[in-house]
Length: 77
Image (cartoon, rainbow, N blue to C red):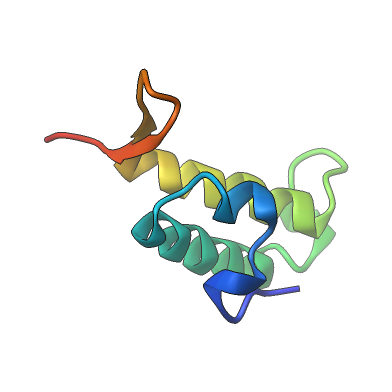
């Protein structure tokens, strides 16, 4: 179930990530949703949706990190 807009993202994403990180999450999730449609392409017995969420969080973590204030901030170069 790809996400069309930020507002369609799960609360666990919308309520914690800044807007740009939500865009990253949405784009990565949608790409992974397409890429891992075939169960043979996934590790273990994760569902397509579980895999897409893991890929999306990994994409966010490349550019963002959780700060001491429990909020997500862009990583500094």
